Image 1 (cartoon, rainbow, N blue to C red):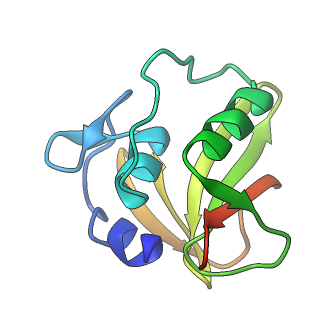
Image 2 (cartoon, helix red, strand yellow):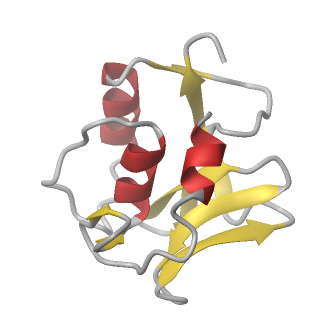
Length: 123
């Protein structure tokens, strides 16, 4: 399950465009690592391009979901032009926190506005 795999990365340092927990992850890298997927490297951290994120999720074989389930990939709008990916932990989120400079599990309400939710087929 992607939430269990994401938990293995807790404590990894934050690194822009990072793809490996040993050297650092950003939110895209954490999502790719948790879902064991390859994702593009040519993205801007403040692009606000939700359509591109949706297209990549679909290309990875993830399906849109309306109900909440631990392990879902979340696309969050954190502010104008600022998108963020996180993994739903069931009681919060697991995400690469740029302010804390590491991957953390944050309990409680999901931060930001959830504008996309996907999961692996069959989950």
